[in-house]
Image (cartoon, rainbow, N blue to C red; front, side, top):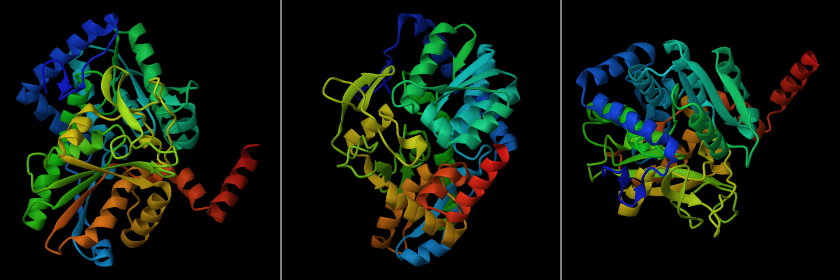
Length: 408
């Protein structure tokens, strides 16, 4: 990374003047932490005692037999405290907040997992917490909203724009501009102005570090391919960093194909033809935007993948050809989720299941001597309303109707 926060031509820090000093302080705090081995040791200790690190690498024996070809391994980030990889970044930023002496944190969230993780961190460290969440996501991720509020966070539904993740990010930045002295913005993914992409990726690198050691111990050699879903890109950057400099390992990012790449109802920025370079929300990357630079509406069955932009680091890796990007449609995701639940007793989040889709397509073409890793970035219980609706489950409908009558 260049000193000015760029990855190739992507990234930077396009921020208002009022935030320059805040970003300078954050960058200094990050550099001090990176140069302090005691900080990383404190971070590892926290994650091993408060979360569930190292998370296991599970051999999916039944799926491997079903598809033939490569051995399928699943990196179980869903077993982290709060149910996703988000805790890795949030707890790390919490330690930085303590160093900087801030008393309040704010965050944006789409799928709710980052909001959950931030509310958890704030409760543990005694911080005031406000979470911005698109009104659409509040409705489809109600269980996470409930828990955030019970942990003391204030959840603010955002009613602007498409009422999803990009709009929540906009509101969080507005809050930060107003409260820079007391507040730290716990950005949830590897996007935004520098140093956020680098900082979030640094904390998430714990995934790839663990996965590399685990696959070598279990399989005896590196995997042929590593798969991860890509919304903003933090879970993908997390696991990819363990294999980034091993050219024999193919890295595959899977974006939200929604209703199909030709439908206009998707969130694929790096594998389709609808995205273009732009500057928004403080950084330069590939955005889904029209010819006037206005952000387009996106769609995904997974609340955490419908972001209009993508990590500038991934834009750079795509441009260099180091990461291959594919997409998975909503229908493909539901089919893969059903198969994974029935064959392995594992319930991946809808976001994570996008990676499963592509892995299932490609596993049969590889040798039984090969292994592949799928990063299961989160667990699917948060998606129970969306999943039950997508499966058109009659007993679930009866349950909801009956509970609604109890509350009426």
